[in-house]
Image (tube, rainbow, N blue to C red):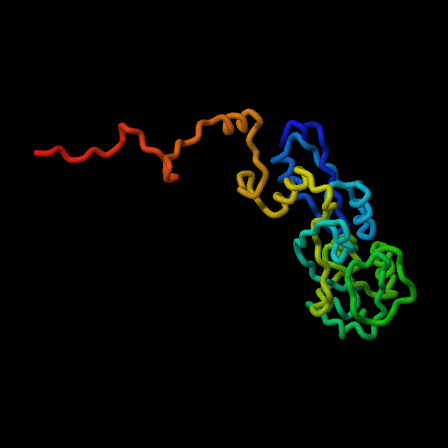
Amino acid sequence: MTDGETGRVFRLAYVPGVTPAKWVNVWTERMPGVPITLVAVPAAEVVGLLRDGGADAGFVRLPVDRDGLSVIPLYVETTVVVVPKDHAVAAVDEVATADLTDDEVFHPLDDTIEWTVRPGLPAFTRPATTAHAVELVATGTGLLLVPQSLARLHHRRDLTYRPVQDAPQSQVALAWPTDATTDLVEDFIGIVRGRTVNSSRGRATASPAEKRAQRQAPKPVQNGSGRRAVPASRKRKGRRPR
């Protein structure tokens, strides 16, 4: 952290289902002078927030419009189907999309899975949000396919979920405005990528005084051949004649 960063705040956006706690904990330990502020934002709004300067970086669900953004894909999530506990799907460990052919499946407007062909039959309505779709599943009027983290986020006692083995998957990534790649953003990228404090690819952690001392330290003297000069006292002496 440089002197100019004292008093600054790092703003981190995240979409539903993403849990940034492990990275935030590392940041808090490594950057005690720069508080981190979390900004919860719907998946459909996170790109606009980043472009408008509402956050320094954010966890997004791919695909997103990458124009003006730098993006680092992080991990892929299993897609699951959310069903009432008395549904036939609840009796098996996993299903295929073909198993849902005769079921009505909700397609919420905030769906983050990129479908080529959606499974099942279209439900009677398109809910505005995944949360609303989960409530409709609980009424027995249809099923819902979502990334597993969203199924956990909207858990209800009367519902369960099972993996859908051949469904497209959702990928989580870290994104930030390319033209606003600050030192703090670089620090957070290092944390997300698992770099240590002393990593050669991370930022220097020396204090200003340490940096000045390093610059002022005498450099080894070199001779004309590019090799370090050897002090006269250490030069090897020849054999004395007998």
